[in-house]
Amino acid sequence: MNKLTDVDWNTWEARDRATLLFVIRDGQVLLIHKKRGLGKGKINGPGGRIDPGETPEQAAVRECQEELCITPKNVEYCGRHKFQFVDGYSIHVWVYRAGEYDGTPTETDEAIPLWFELDQVPYEKMWEDDKFWLPLVFDRQQFSTRWIFDDDKMLDQHIELVGVA
Image 1 (cartoon, rainbow, N blue to C red):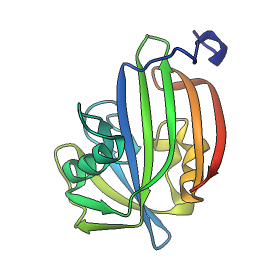
Image 2: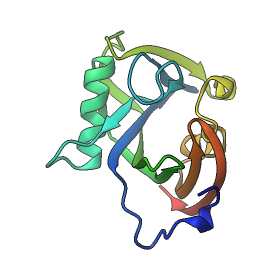
Image 3: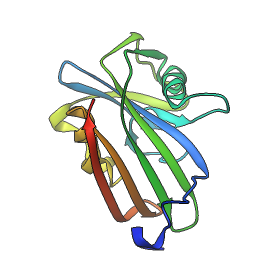
Image 4: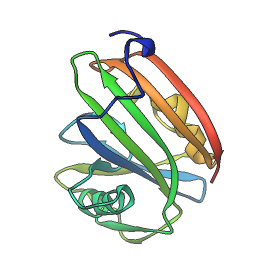
């Protein structure tokens, strides 16, 4: 399973469901240095698994509260990812953005908050796919993607633009 065509995306179901949420304001994005879990050691947006009974948006807000001690406001849907890993793991990720929040971004046992100018995002310290779709979040373009990964190496990808938020 090295190519998108090796997966029947019509019947694909992810093992896990998760979220990412990017706070973007004043030409900057709030990212995290992930201290544990999937992507440990990488720079990413706050997020995590969706709990039973939660909507993806509710999970995205909760994860920001847990990881950064902030509550995003006026959350906007941006897109979704379907990640299939060659080892069999799979995850469906809903992506959101917000321009405002309550609280102060604070380091927790899960994450260290980091602000970056939009044109200085450290893609070399992030998942390999982020450089392809994160600019779409900045531009408020909605998307739907499919990815094949071998550990943290991207093998194949497809990005479909589905509108403007």
